[in-house]
Image 1 (cartoon, one colour):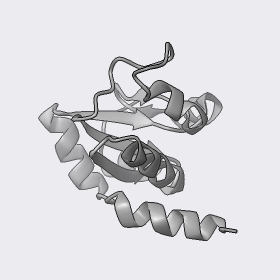
Image 2: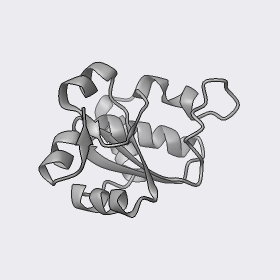
Image 3: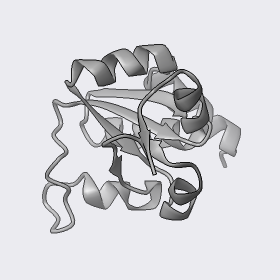
Image 4: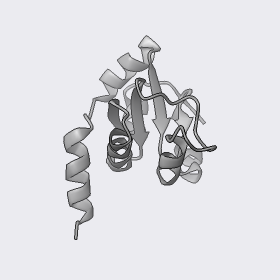
Length: 124
């Protein structure tokens, strides 16, 4: 049996954590896809990265599977994907899921509050 801490340790080992500054540089390059994996109620409270896809962690597998009708066509396995959540834990776990599904370039930028504090563009 695994603990939440063990799941996070595994996820953090395979999904690189980048700083908000590095995330902003990726954002400014226009070459990365940003995804907020929080529930819509959490996003409504704090906003999210400007232009980020909103795919809740609980729906991610369905949105990321090209063989399903729920596939989000904005996703591609060769895209540079940056995940955000409230503090970094959900983004790490979601990133490991994407990696397990064959998405290679997945990064965890951590929490939205750090993004905003670093001057990253956000929207309601």
